[in-house]
Image (cartoon, rainbow, N blue to C red; front, side):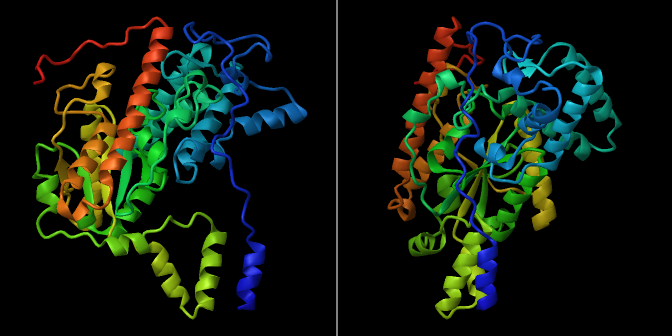
Length: 432
């Protein structure tokens, strides 16, 4: 017992980190105008450039280096719970090395905060050569994903709000109302790297409303978050993992078919054992000491913290429909290595048109945005008797309200910038 207390004294809990990495700088230019590329003086650069420039020597150079490092605090601030990916860190280091070697500064602008100017030309040549030299498709995917994430992170600093992924001047966070998701459900947002930090992405609403432990972001092709997701799936078992995907090449069940027959909900179990996960080593050690003092074993302590057998894990593929096929294939390949068969259980929903169809039409009316898919799932589960007392309808309403707030923020931004608030329709079917 003495040794345990000494261990606790050694592992001191760190102070709580702020929700956002930094809000000190804002864009200093009209968002309707193109953002500048290379500017001669540090003081006249936009924040996206000022944080990426070479600062000289001594303390300025040291400070500049720390600005370009992707810290754990910054990484988590964007809504991700994994450690900072090593591949992303290497890409950032390579970008800085190239910046020094060619004496051209990184600059970002345009839709999506893409690289611009002389640096973009040189970096494009280098990354294409690196990509072609990689030995297999897995290495190429990891390189592609890491580069997308690194560039989007660097290009969004001081420009996008970390929580809502909108420019600070359009931040909608104050209008989004958090809501607790029923403990028996957990969402996994399996996101394509090209959708990461997209302003009109709707998957981000799930962790804005429910929190990152109830709706966890996992990025396609990035090892660290993918491992966290699959470790959770291994523990839960295949019968507790479902993907919301209209897979035409496999048996797809409706919500009623999947859960109405022979499935029951242990409300007492989910309320008592499915607690918020331990976030720090100090929390775990304190919990084990308390358990020990109550006469229980350390084994029991660890088992209680990881007992999630009753949780239903739902994977939402968050990407364009053209990218979703490759993402689902990756899920099936991993399922085969984990469970011995590549069949990944899929659920279809009775979907109508989402509010986001106004700004971002889908290929057909039966396909919808990520947030609307989550709304549909919760609403259909609520109709089943065993889920009727879980309050899933109110949780669906919370996402619906957040979706309306996002639509309003995007519409206001487009009107201010003189852009159209409607998109060319990709389908001609009428809705009754």
